[in-house]
Image 1 (cartoon, one colour):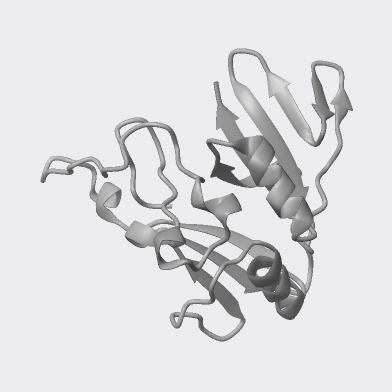
Image 2 (tube, helix red, strand yellow):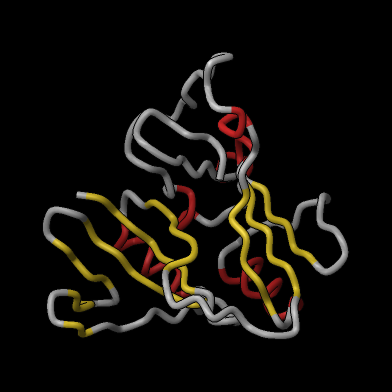
Length: 170
């Protein structure tokens, strides 16, 4: 996702256009909402647009999930065998179709939150099912795990098993 800020990646939403639910309107990394200024000495790729990329074995099922559960709007830039969802300032999510599922066992996309409890409730009300964890130091309570010194997270999966997360830093 593009929009690198002084403190890290910034996910801008389309909330101002009333195109995303409130649960994703606050998905911002704490810090400046203004992108950093790049000069001619910045590495070449730091000027490029960046997309998160996931795969799907059933694009129609994925489209239903991302549009009807998360409130994303399909981009007119979508091409054959792909779904493209654009966010403010050039960020995007690309989902492409393939015959076999992803084998990734880690969080593949994170949404930054400033009100994780509210976001979890809104997404659960929209039908999102959250993962429940009990791994010793990481245990979810009401779908949210708290890690002292880091923050709070809530994980869920899309229809293809891609792990997505809400995260609120301390």
